[in-house]
Image (cartoon, rainbow, N blue to C red; front, top):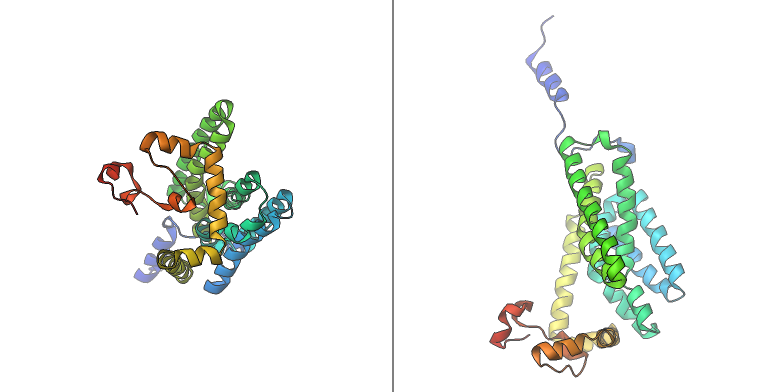
Length: 281
């Protein structure tokens, strides 16, 4: 019996490999999408609660961050990208709010590490999803994950070598270098597995960031006083002073820093290339 052109077209389409990004996994495994307001509320919770609980003890804060990251990744995966973006943008605001309760530099440093812990735990979940069902993903997607995983392995080797020479510096550079690759893999896997709509939540976060920036520009002292930003910056100044940053800056530029306000001054476009112009902001 002859086959109609429509049937042949449908059959051919079904036989073709799916496009990059087409969800191959069962729909039952797609996470809950809480909507723009719910997404931002979840982002604020996973960002702020570990910081607040850290004041009762570092172990409590870390445990809370790990649990929240696992819950977010497993039950509200479509909210993960916004939650991580929110965490990297606004974690220091939460730290500033609790900064009067911080006791020492060590606590000040550790309390600012939760966005990376959130990233690392979420990445472990995303990596588990991918590597336990690797064959279910598009070939080009597997190539993307393979290449970035090789980069992560190379960064790990570099970290081990640096750990021998300078442990604290190696940890700092590990975070700065590895975080973009972790975020790339997280966002890619989440977007592949879920139908995500982050436009409105992202617009809301961007709008708040823009408004906060202008508020800090035009009402700097009042805003810092309101969110304990002055206390936060004083901790930053103390951290830099003990690390010898100010002395190094004095030798290199001849500039003497008098208070935390001087640390907010940057060269034009925040690059030493224009330092000789004498223009600062």
